[in-house]
Length: 344
Image (tube, rainbow, N blue to C red; front, side, top):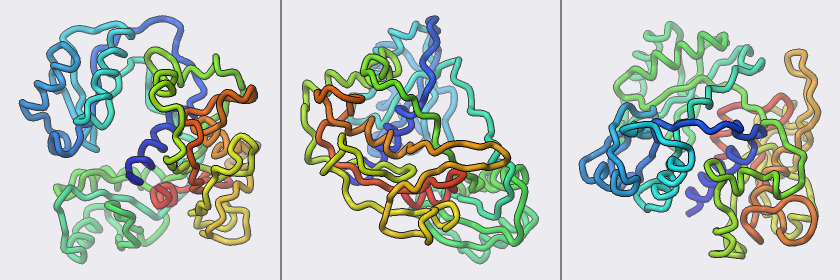
């Protein structure tokens, strides 16, 4: 259950931190993206019984057009439908126990632009091996080293992901090229360079009516229906993997002892590296010549998840009376993918 709650917290934080609203004009949706539960199908596969179930839930035929590198299914509809119909399909998929998550593939959603921090040199790569693969690490590392043209060593393991280190610092583009080469190896599910992550912009409108992510027809989570089904979530703990937290009256008594996973003392700003104090020391920065004030993003996300409701102030949290476990992974100039993964 802890793994599920952490995953849900990460998805919740990502969805609620987006500061831009949907376009005012309606768009047509031609495809859906679905991740099946492992008991329903192997990663990236769509057996006949699973296809039949998904078609029954959506009320239409589905054509498998591709898979994501983590095993999500990209399914084309026979013809594009409007946002309301796509929202209804996705809603029916999400409530089935064989579906981990589902979303419409929206034409206007494009990959995020690279940040200035991507230009910083680095020495680490993260790889996820395919299920059931246990390589001979000396031989495997030797083969990968020849493939990318530099010596690779195994630094550590984080759950199912392995962190590899290059002999010398590499440019961001070269590290990305190395990851792409490694990802083509038959034992590897996916590979990424360890880059820096940044907290997204924080909206400052406190009115519930502006919280479209809670009640919007397509992108919202239908929170009012959830409140009717479960008005209190006092037995649930949600981990917020972010910038840490500071005290706030809307969360008083419900913040558990957390942890600070930032390995760089300078970025942590608390005088040391990893420690059991997740306090947000501020992530104000002057990185790459761009001056930014502190975002207090961890507190914002915790408030979106768990701020007291029906108290006449601030925003409405999603889960009333839920407990928050603060996990600090972002500090000055953001944080590394490695620390974020360790926190997760």
